[in-house]
Length: 261
Ligand code: 5GP
Image (cartoon, rainbow, N blue to C red; front, top):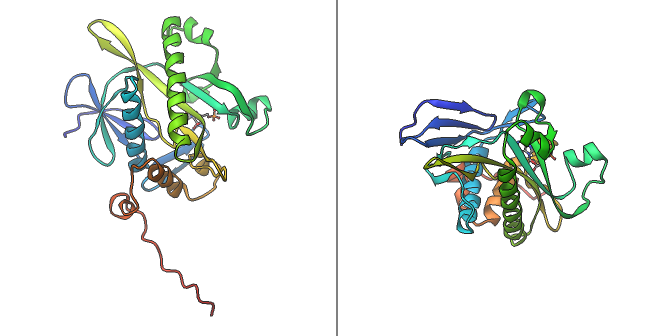
């Protein structure tokens, strides 16, 4: 499928004009960034894995009635999506306290929250995506009160579904970030889920060992980033053992000589 002009280049993805009006092509890069772009690197294979994982999760959400921007995955790194007007707010859903929540409020890391906590961050790199209140969002017309009610309902349903999906494969869904957009439908604006859901946008811990299977491996220099993303894909049944080398082009396993000299 031919791509049109570049519409926007973000930290992890590029958006191109799609083949028809109202569509776009979302390209997943291997670039990894953290701490508002202060830390940057390229992680080979990350874009391919996020494309697959996000496709799987958005399709599953679609099956439970959550409308998303995803039309279909086109190839290893690209998805055909509906072009939406992005609401400039990151919706963060937390089940366990960690990350910025523990840093800002001094809550002990790993505290299990009594119910899911939804936070709002204003999407603005220059300001470092600051935490904002519902009242800021309404006051500055980023979204209406009605839209926020609807989005809150979607966030909780998505959290319920994803917690169950991950729990079934031995993973705790600690927290995640969602983005929503407005789709023009015969003059009416419909709110749909946009962006991606992947180990770049979620915190995922192994149930038994609490090993991090997400972008914190990059943020905290824990190593084995790709192996962790692959583990998530494998557990979700997206990628099979034999797929890693041919499709994602990871290095072949090296023979290990176990005999001591
Ligand atoms: P925190 O606020 O603790 O840094 O992040 C909470 C959750 O939202 C984490 O799962 C994190 O990955 C996700 N998140 C928050 N902001 C961003 C962002 O700008 N980009 C990405 N990829 N994820 C984010």
